Length: 141
Image (cartoon, rainbow, N blue to C red; front, top):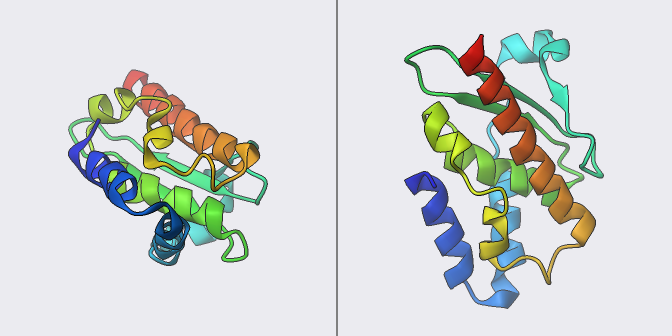
């Protein structure tokens, strides 16, 4: 697991249970805005159907360059937005190998499974699966 993501997982795991959801909401507030080029070309973003909220992502993979991740999640969906922000903070700028080696269930170690519905946890899994699929496709292109 990439060090940045590992630190985020540890931060959640070390946070008292009653403060984990507020921490996720802090991440939701920290999700960076989309660059203008993606705002102008919404077709470049992939919907994440596993999310209950309308969430979209774009992954840029260029040979020899860090992977870039972009997420668009509505403020009215703070849990999904928080998960997107965790992925962005933990994986953006990583190598393809770092991202592809991320455990598919890493988020279970965050201690949110009894605070967030299984449907929303499935959204986190869906986001990561789509990111990995895009990275793998970018490496073979």
